[in-house]
Length: 272
Image (cartoon, rainbow, N blue to C red; front, side):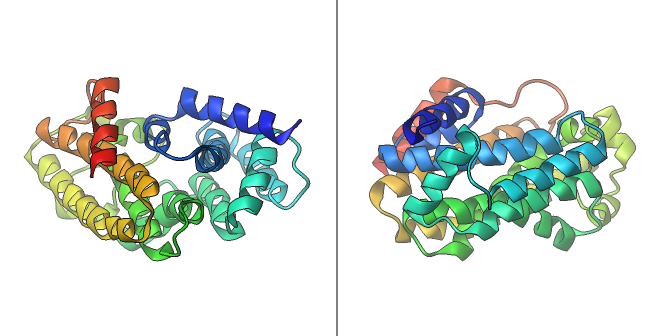
């Protein structure tokens, strides 16, 4: 398989599967767009295994195989494209291995005692994506890239409470559930009462604080990379605003943004 064919495949996968990612990278030059599609395709493979229906031991085996494949000759389109991107943009090895570690953590841990534990998980599954991507953007501000990735994951956690519950996972820290008098039965029954609204408001405020800090990354980026990152942030912020407007009822109905809304946010990113 040629490198061009491999990039074509990961770009097709990104357009087909990515909810927000594909919109953000539209504004990038072709080489950067291809490289980020390769990162996305790898992260998607990790997610698909961790969230799939295989027995736990088989999941772990496949995740270890994905980690080992990062250090082996590329054997399929995802790894051919990723190998070229890693060489072209000096994407570091560690965040890619951290993604695998995050997938493994999902097979080993389904509750988080406090935010410190959750933050460590978010750094692996999303902060690592930020660190991998910032090399493509051309910035050395790894810390803020990681912080922005954590912010986006915190919003995902709010949005996906129901989906995660159905996978047997509760990412909301146990001490915070207790402090706001929200039980796992409330989650199971989809009860968005006053206690739930107060808890989610706290989480939303924290996610926005992480986003504000992470967006200081923009000052270190060229205009098109900054537009890309602004688009990601705008899409997630709009999702969080929509959730808040619904009283944080994430249990019923679609929370996805319409294609028109997404295109408007892309435009705003270009005009910033």
